[in-house]
Length: 394
Image (cartoon, rainbow, N blue to C red):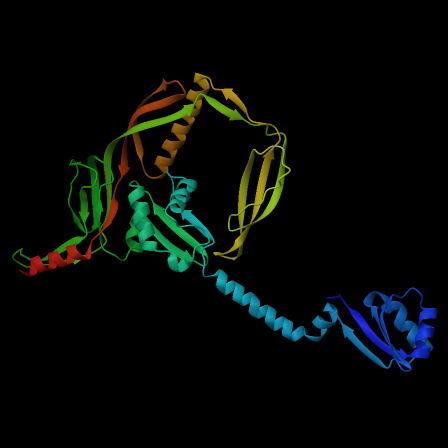
C-alpha cells in the first residue's frame, strides 16, 4: 500500500492547463470520461499542486485520499483501541510464562551452579507457569545439595525466585507454615543448643552423625501426673552449634589460557528467550557473552534481552603455571572460601592443608576444624502425625 496519494477529477480543459504549468508533478493512472479527467498524484507533490489550483481557481470535481497516511488519519480511534487491546493481550500471554529464574541467599554455591542444575531438571526460562511445581523443585534442590538447609520457591510476575538458606536461621521458622524437625546436616560434637520451639533431642557434648534428629517438631502435652495426653506439631526452632572436622580439597591446572584483554570488540545483539545471534564474519570465534534481561517493571520480565558479546581478536595462548603461582592462587581461593564460611557464622579453629603436585594439576588438600551453626529442616509427614495421634489415643 502506498504511503499517501490523491485521486483527483477535473475538467479536461483544466487538466491540460495543469500538465503544462506543473511539469514537475508526477501524474499517474489518467482516465478520461467525456469532458472530465481523473488522475492520481503523490503526497510529495501536494505543495506544488494545490497552491496552483487555489491561485488559478480551478474547480476540483472530486477528490479521494488513499494510502497508509489516510487510513491512519481516518481510523485513529479504532487503531488506538485495537493497539491497546493487542498490547494487553500480549502482556497477558507473556504473564503466563517464566522469563527469568533468580537465585537468592546462596553463599557456597554460585548462581551459575544452581541455575545449571535447575535447567538440568527441566525448569527453564520460557516454560509455562502452570508447569512449575514449586514444592517438587524445592525437594529436588534440597536432595541434590545436602548442605542447603532450606529452600523456598515462589513466582512473582514472570520471575521464578529460588530462596536458599545454607544454614538454619530463626527467620526460617517465621516463614514456614508446615511443621518440621531439625536434623543434623553434618557429623560432629554438639557445643551448645538453645531451643526456642520443639523438643530438643540432643545436649552439649553429644556426638552426632549426619542425619540425626536434633530438635523434634512434635511437642507432647502432659497431664498433672506426667502422662502424655497428645502431641502438637510445630516448626522446630533452635540455635545449635557443633564442632565439625571438614575435608578440604581444591585444584588448579598446570596450564591456563591467557587472553589479550587490550584488543577486543563489543557487539550488542537482540535475543529472544536466550537465543543469541552472532555475526558470521567474526574472524576470531573466541568470545564471551553477558546477557541483560529486559523487564517492564518489578519482577515482570519480558522474553527479550540485550546480549553484550566481547570478541577477543587474538587466539588464547597456553601459559604454564609455576608451583609458587599455583600455591598463591589456591591459598587466595581458600581464604575467600573461609571468609564465606565466616559470613555464614562459622568459626575456624584449625586448618591443616598442603599442596600436592600431579601430572596435570596442583592440589591443595587437607582438613579444617570449625564451630558452626547446624540444622536442616525435615518436614513432618502427615502419616507420622497421624500415627503419633493414634498412639497417644490408645
